[in-house]
Image (cartoon, rainbow, N blue to C red; front, top):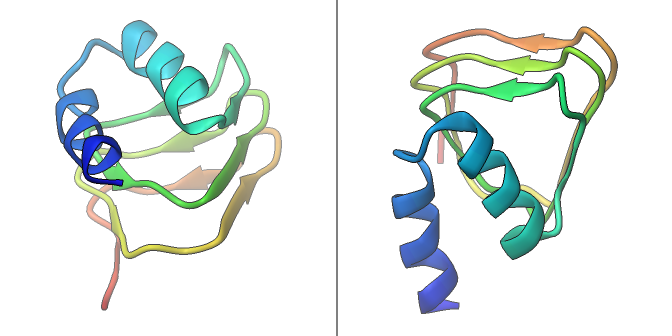
Length: 83
């Protein structure tokens, strides 16, 4: 668990292509090749991002079980789900 937590901090700063691959391989997320996550802290237990789904920069989400964004869905920048 600690290794995954450390990896989550490092992953945030990777270029998107590498970050997407790391999120898929390390966390088992399903992320469409055209989806995008900005510099944000979002690490649910399960995540699925559809075609052209977007999560903006500086978005923070406390631990949740599941996040699903369908095709063209957007979570804007600087969005926060409080603790």
